[in-house]
Image (tube, rainbow, N blue to C red):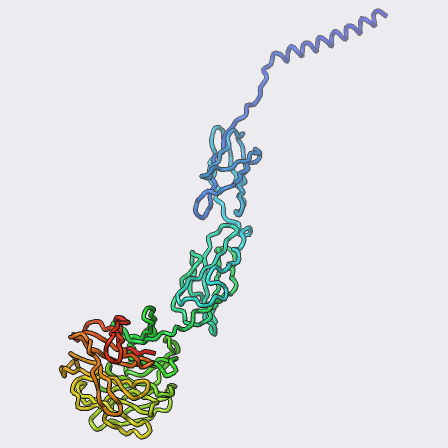
Length: 500
């Protein structure tokens, strides 16, 4: 029994001895732990298009779990990253997410540049434009006006605009202006009393263009201006109308002069050399709907001194062509000879009154200083002298409202030269029944000429051109009473007046 117990004790002691030996041996060896190495990432986030920084950018670095927001210049930095490979995910609204790989090395800063491009799938179209002015269906709009609209873009994109404008009765999809930065456009040369339609096309250069509704407005009515006249523009004569303060230009092509208004006061006839030969054209009272009337040109001695008239019913135009006085319908048809001048004489100007159905005409010889006035019967073409034997350059006659008188001009100096210059042209009124005439230019400035005299529509005044006799000074338009008093300047740089 004792022997068995001793054996067990011995085995236990041996086991303890072995364990102690192992512990002693383990304590004598050195313990080794591998050290961790670190680096960093330094980067910049910019747009690819213009290399500018963006706001609200988020940079995620995996597998570090770090999230960084770049500064205002687009710079970011992540320190204390264990060496190894990382992925950098960059996200910001409206731009495509970027994923860039980078390797971090010991004690080094890995440099990263991220360039973002827009994600058009996230971009929204501009809002539908709305009108600012003119108001929808506005009336009385000026012929030069501002078209204005407003819109916005959800993504704050830069917007460009195109504008379509067309008049009622027309149709077009061609813009009158394109690639506008401003949300307004000045339009000019619109026509009176016309309805216009317009539309704005907005583009953000990303989405399909956005078309506004079609808006409309109507321009102001045709002005009922009293005066028509000729004015020199760039060495060409053009037709204008005016109320004394506001003036509009009726013609812009070729040379145009001698405006004469129709009896109903709605159409304007004038001489034009746009076709080289001088012909009579007509337009509406603001210069629109222009058309040529004559087939045979207006012709005679001294082209700029020639004149013509409407028939009292407004159906025909009466005009000179050398030794013949022609009438033609306002549509260009029905050309006929009304009268022939005496042998060796030429018609130069005329007027036609319904009072007694008479025509008065100026007839010249081969010289502008050789003139007579005749009364003519429209039905028979018979001529009767009214004013004759008056040497000096004469102006064209114009009947009074009642047809009992006529006004004309005459240079009483009887000066003559090759240029047809006048030194003292005065206004005369002649009694049609007796042929007796009287000078009414009693207050005319010495050295000036009174020219192109006509009666006012109510017969109470005379309208005429006044200018220095030097041949180059500016011409101005005046009115005065029938007795020559109350001379009043109404228009400057103007001649050949007609009072509607």
